[in-house]
Length: 116
Image (cartoon, rainbow, N blue to C red; front, side, top):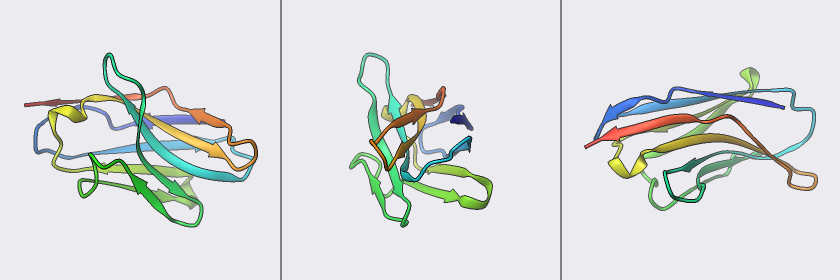
């Protein structure tokens, strides 16, 4: 399994970014696709997940500002981030979790920096 994130950048507070995750090598049933983030000195935390039936889940801190979506034909997952805040600064990781055994697969991460 290979997950490659892109789209991270330096942006001013109030701005927007769209992160992309290209997935390949997935030969199993996927339970969820999602985005997590890790800020310096903090644990990795859930940002948003999307189940195979289209149900989405968001961290309270990003509800109403971030939107997760996917393009199955292109094996892509996206995270649209609007009204960015300095506390959104982190490395953002793409995640795929398998239905069997709930195995987690991760990308290498993409840096998002929001300047205030």
